[in-house]
Image 1: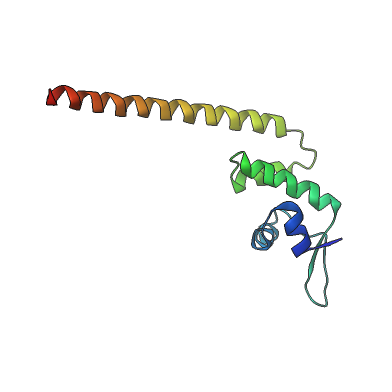
Image 2: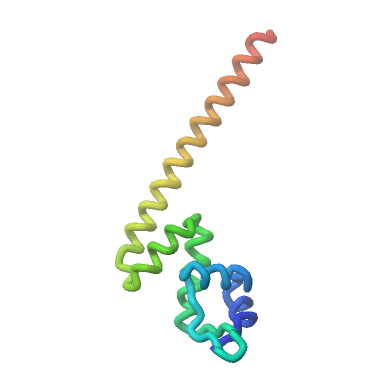
Length: 114
């Protein structure tokens, strides 16, 4: 079992984030000491925490991470990752179109100056 401070260092999740994740039931401690309310995490918690860190870095929202965590078999994880990838691809395409619009607008301004 790992104290919250040790677990925080192991997972790069701040103690505040771990408390928040416990509050929203995204990642709950394996054990809470009833005498002092200290939170303890185990190796299973470590696996889940690392998964959450990875999902967060991939741009998953709290709601999306919750969907992943609710499916304890992780059977739908591949599908969710593909959906996230497709969403990112659409965002990239949208940003590229905006850049083209900006470039066209800048060019039209240059033509009027000449």
